[in-house]
Amino acid sequence: MPGTLTRPELTAADRCDRCGAAAKLRAVLPSGGELLFCGHHARAYEAGLREMEADLQQDEQHEVQ
Image 1: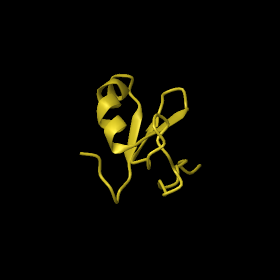
Image 2 (image 1 turned 120 degrees about the vertical axis):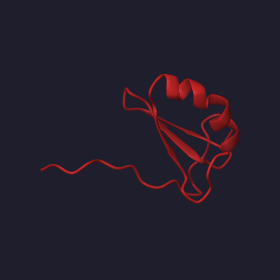
Image 3 (image 1 turned 90 degrees about the horizontal axis):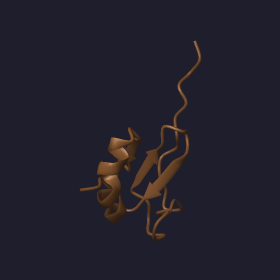
Image 4 (image 1 turned 90 degrees about the vertical axis):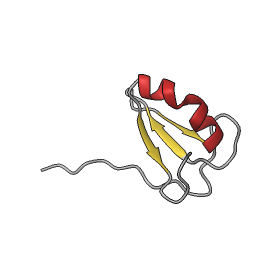
């Protein structure tokens, strides 16, 4: 049985695609691409990402609130 592909945990080297701050959320798009967002931009774009059915993966150590 083939294994499930998983993406690595976010690290301090991962940066927000909008502003360059530390990434707290990975949004995996239905097309397979991914975007990284800081907490501020994750909150700003969350509704739209959910609407397009993106898979949202939060940094376990720093939850976006």
